[in-house]
Image 1 (spheres, rainbow, N blue to C red):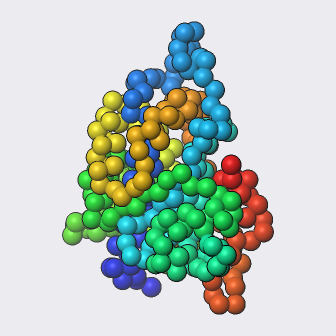
Image 2 (image 1 turned 90 degrees about the vertical axis):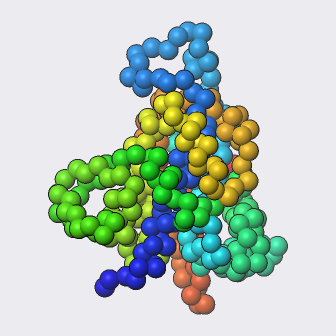
Image 3 (image 1 turned 30 degrees about the horizontal axis):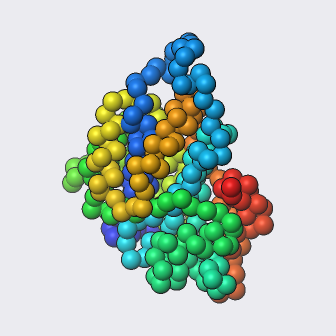
Length: 290
């Protein structure tokens, strides 16, 4: 069944916003890093990299959603240099959280208390602290996506897309997609069901983060950081990035593909809301709790 234009536009926008966030975050903590070849065979004995090891204080968890009155998907991103990972998890607006001893779905908490209410609910329900949040308006995405560059996508079969009103045919195999073609591809590939959308977007995001780690080390990172931060709503400060830049250097140098998805598994409540399964909650807490 063909989805409506508005639904497609919403999820394309939100997905792109999530990629934007990761680009902002990694660019911000890497932009002061000198350009370095990952293929270098040795590190100078007196360099910071030869002495530095990350610790728990370098870890950070951020909460992401679209800057709209009723986002239906939320994402957690965990920067975890101690284990050499960037962890990704998504949950829908029907997930039940407990805030101030009141249990209700995320959509109700967001409507009443905004993104800070979701942060409080995650802390009080699962003991997961989020050090910051980032919200992105759909209208601000084109410039940010254009600054990201090409992403490699493996097509299992020939695919026809309409891009800016023009019919294009992408051949089977490896394709390099710019921001405009990526948005069209996402609109074609995104599942119709919300939970499947979250899974799809997490996997796609991990792919994009792992592909663009090297890009974020070049000298245009500062420009990318400035552009993206100016186009988002967030509560982050430069010190959030600056205090973790050595940890980012460590992770990027030793872990070229750090992004990993925490699979989401839910149980359905009688009122059609969702709760995390016991196994999923344990895995999520192991990954995100401090």
